[in-house]
Amino acid sequence: MKKYCYITNDGENYSEHEITQGMRLCDIKGRKGDTVCALSNGSIVSLAYVPEAGDKIQFLAPNDDECASRVFLRGASFLLYCAAKELFPKRALLIDHMLCGGAYCELGEISGADIKALEKKMYEYISEDEDFVLLRMPLQKAKKVMLEHGLYKKEELASFGQATFYDLYEFNGLINSFYGVMPKSSGYLKEVRLFDYSEGFILKYPAPFRQAHKAICDEPKYAAVFSQAEKWAGVLSASYISDINKMSKNNKIEEFIQINEALHEKTIAQIAKKITCKSNVRVVLIAGPTSSGKTTFAKRLLTHIRVLGKKCRAISIDDYYKDRAMVEKDSNGDCDFESLSAIDIKKFNEDLNLLLSGKTAYMPKYDFMTGNREKTSPLRIDGDILVIEGIHGLNDELTKLIPAAEKFKIFISPLTTLNLDEHNVVIPEDLRLLRRLVRDKRTRGFSFEQTFSIWDSVRIGEYRHILPYQKTADIMFNSTLLYEPLILKKYCYNELKQMASKSENYSKAENLVMLLDYFLSLEQDSAVPKNSIIREFIG
Image 1: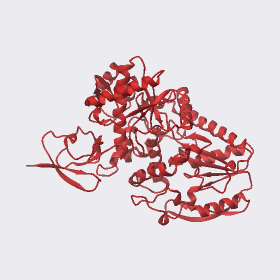
Image 2: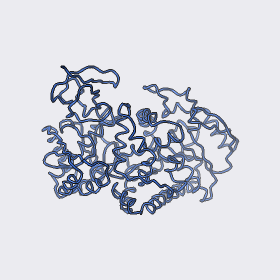
Image 3: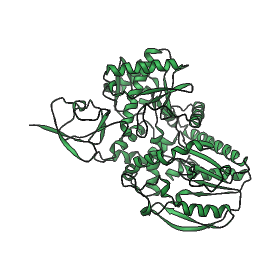
């Protein structure tokens, strides 16, 4: 009797494909050449996976799918690790944080020639197309193997994981762990690139919205923020997830929370001082991608500006969203709230002109539950500075009537430097997604399914309408709190675990569960200050 699996290219229309004994996904003809993994019944699987009768399969390519991009990054990171071990065995590789459309890496005092040699060696591995061999073993055995291979931070983190079995991978005689599905073999990684940057280099890989072969775009302001965050993490001895977990386990997390919050407070005070030192500033514009903490940051900034003797008020661009029925749709048929066209620019500028002229404006209030502007209230500013926050704050089309010299622009985003270990970073977008899941459920009545379903559209909108303006900022603020995953886990872990595999968003939920599995959960959040940025999401 013939057996069939079902293949789709668009996630909707499936066709029968006969499967034979031992056939793997990589043996199925007709798939795109740049695929690196697949969805099988909702879960991410390697192309070495042997499909079963009735499986629903969708092949994924890193330029089209975020999960596939992560698979590519894991494989590329392993190749880089192997190349560094072979060429520079006495140097320690650190894959540090996301930057310039890739991962920023360090390998001691490294030259441009060294970087070229690393890339050449990686492409030798790629041309040989050897398999990444999965080694699944009991946890205690895996920890012993890690110690034997000098993977000390990985062994430490494994102690906090949930699984009784652990996945390691072997390539070119070396063993390592990369916390998820790997490409079948090195031959699938032809788009990887290395670029010289600062004191290290960027590991560039294909992902939605960007291509690996394109030269990196210098981001000195981002780099400076990450550099400062690295210094803080070093001072706090909190560069890795296991460091945070140990503080929680040893009852030191409350002090750690207080220090995190104090560092935020200090930075906000410094920004307020820079603003008040510029006598011509009338408007402060705060922008950033979704779930950056713009609203709370604006409130705290107001307090510090007032402490320095300046009168100020704050308004939110979010209150100028058009009624949901009037918002233009994106290519998926969803409301495109990331587009400037979703804002009632005419009403916004009318009110802005009234306020800056010392007159009364009747301010709208947008209700995210109903999707409508439902009420207005009078506002008049009798002071020096108007603080405006919203995702489009840095787009001059929104405030083109205000002279550039009278604006002070702030870009805010959670740019975490927290790592799983020396070779695996925590992706900042994962933290933003966790924040948004929790906030949308609490304040907008959205289910996790609803938030997941619009996430790709949100990210596309950010790349089109928000991130291009970040370079115009006078200053950047990193809204990450290193302890926040322990708090967020309490509010979303169980619901994420319960999402059914038949959900079209199961792979996204599975990815977040895999990340949260390595964090302890902080069930008591009373130590989190009422004005903390994380309160914007958990309440």
